[in-house]
Amino acid sequence: MKNIFYIVLILCASCATNPFTGKKTMAFMPNSQLLPMAFAQYDQFLIDNKVVKGTSDAEMITRVGVRISVAAERWLDANNYQGYLKDYVWEYKLVEDEAVNAWCMPGGKIVFYTGILPIAAGETGVAAIMGHEVAHALANHGQQRMSAGMIQQAGAIGVAAVTNEKSSKEQSIWMQAYGVGSSVAGMLPFSRSHETEADQIGLYLMAIAGYNPDEASQLWERMKANSGKKGPPEFLSTHPSNDSRISNLKSLALRAKSEARKFGVTSFR
Image (cartoon, rainbow, N blue to C red; front, top):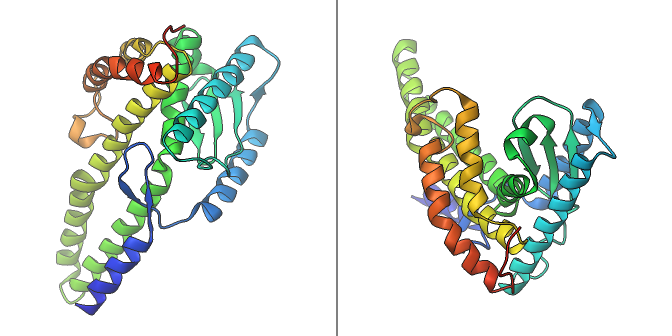
C-alpha cells in the first residue's frame, strides 16, 4: 500500500497542464531535458538531409510557420498562458524527400518534406498541416508518449516479475498478452486521442492565422485518395480512420472560425 502511495505521488509530481484542454498530462521528462535533446536531433537531421533554400516553396513554409506560431502565441496570451513559449526556438525547414510527411519537434522545430506539397495543394493546405503538427508540440504530445512508454515498460517488468516462477512458455504467453493488451487498450487509443486533439487545436491555430479551416477536411480527402488503399481497422491504428478524421474536421471548422473571430479574424485566405 505504501508503495502505491509513493507511485501516486510520483505521478502527480510529474504532471503538466495542457493549456488547450486544461487537462493534466504526464510529463516524466521535463522540458529542461527534452528540448535540448530535440534541438540536437533536429540539427543532426538537417545535416543528414537536403534542406531546400531560396525557393518559393521554402519561403512559403517559413511564411506559414511564422503565422501559425504568432497565432499560437496570441491564443496562449489571451488565455492567461503568457510565457508558455519562452523556451521555443522556432525554425521552419523544407527538406527534399518524396515522403508524404511533416513534423514539429518539441520546442518548435519544424520540417516539411517536398513530397507532401502536392497534396497540400497550396498555402492553405500547408497551414492545415502546419497547424496540426505545431499543435502536437504545443500540447506536449511527444512528452506524453515518452511518459506512457515508460509506464508500459514498467508494466512489462512487473508482469515479468509476477510470472517469474512460471515456466518460460507460460511467462512468454503472459508477456505477449500484456504487450497486445497494453497496446490495443492503452497506447493506440492514447495516440489516436492525440491526433484528434491536434486536429482541433490545429484548426484553431490556422483560423486565427487567417487561413480557412474548411481546407483541413479537403486536405484529408486528398490524403485519403493518395493513400490508395484501406488501412488497418481504427482500433489497431495509431491514427483515426480517414473517414472519422474528415467528419470530425468538418464539424470543427465552424468552431474554429468562431474562435478566430475572438481575435478579430473575420475573413480567411
